[in-house]
Amino acid sequence: DGGITQSPKYLFRKEGQNVTLSCEQNLNHDAMYWYRQDPGQGLRLIYYSQIVNDFQKGDIAEGYSVSREKKESFPLTVTSAQKNPTAFYLCASSVMTSGYTDTQYFGPGTRLTVL
Amino acid sequence: AQKVTQAQTEISVVEKEDVTLDCVYETRDTTYYLFWYKQPPSGELVFLIRRNSFDEQNEISGRYSWNFQKSTSSFNFTITASQVVDSAVYFCALRDGAGGTSYGKLTFGQGTILTVHP
Image 1 (tube, helix red, strand yellow):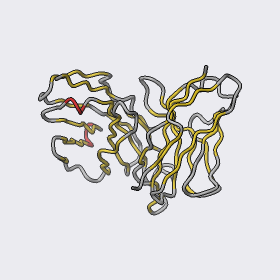
Image 2 (cartoon, rainbow over the protein chains, first blue to last red):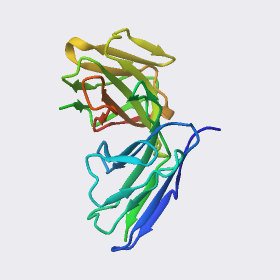
Image 3 (tube, rainbow over the protein chains, first blue to last red):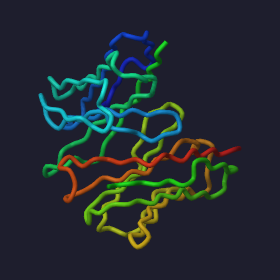
Image 4 (cartoon, rainbow over the protein chains, first blue to last red):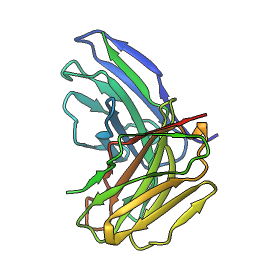
């Protein structure tokens, strides 16, 4: 089955630690995205990538880093510089059509809690 | 700047009632796309519909229907004969088109929490 997988589902982090969230897709989509969702709020874009080895900052990139070494994978690292990392993180992907991104499809999410 | 407003933070209905979720958007683009997503308690966002700015036809899919009105910048979502399984958070989103950033940023509303009681 084609889809987007995220792991782990739940992640606990101590203050001062870096953690990496995994996102994999087998939809052959070109573009991938990371969003953050806080309780009662909409989604905010952290980073996005349209092609391998290239990515761009979104609205709230500070304290996060990404890599895109393979088309299928777009891991997100939450660094110790992120002041309030407790949130629900969603990964998405989409095809590129005529240079523009098409409908975004989402993974099941990772809930990160800082202890 | 793009903006999406979902004025209803929470809606509570009894099963079999019809319910309409409102979405109002702002954009300077002439070409744009509107979306609705459903987020059940499991957390994953499920894509429901995409509508482009040139197509104002209403759409019906089973118990779901969407009313797009450019004149009022609204893209409302109606669930007919609601069921308990419809309980979720529903997000409206706007993506810019040719006039915006090349990748097409998706701007989300705050979401509407729908609770359907048996």
